Image (cartoon, rainbow, N blue to C red; front, side, top):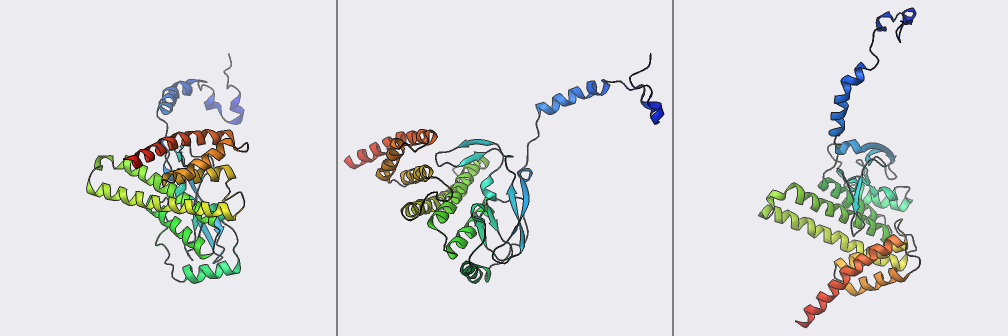
Length: 295
């Protein structure tokens, strides 16, 4: 009886007639099973690619390490609305920094500048800027933090709105939260040592400083700018302001804002659910504060 591949000799493939249809499948079945049992762990650089921009200050073509959309897996979102991802920290790659003139900006705000803004950046940043010695495939937390500082400096120099500066400070604060968590995991065996405690205190101090300025900036923006602020709707900004107020023990302000969110018909249900969680914490904080005054 002719085989499944008989007749291929006219194509010069007469050596294939005796191939077994499912032999390779049987051989690789065990290998496929093993590969499924041990999925490949992605490295940080696997989530990144180089995106090209034109710097609005020096007009040079520059490349910025950028996260691939949808590649990272979201694990959770914390009380500060900080998204936490598996195996990678996207916050490290949100600042676009020109290695030639030093102009830096959060990707949300990348775009053209006025002539006065360009002049200010060139005079106050570019003239003294020292370019980095090498381009990195990935950034450490410290390198990413430096980029946020450059971003904030550029925003101040070009007189950006309070909401933009608050947003940069919020993102830098989130980065430091992630940095703190990373330290606790990576250096857990060193917990309690002077070096570890010193490093932890430094991170927490900077974290407080950036988040305090985010709080102040959003407070100012709520009074002087229209919504959305930094691309955030009113309920999100109000919620963030309340959470930050609670962090800095301004409990009465936090309580007023949370109450307003809960009674407002325009507040999305998901935000009301978060506000209810914060309200429970606030009740405890206020009770502790009153108890402390009585003592």
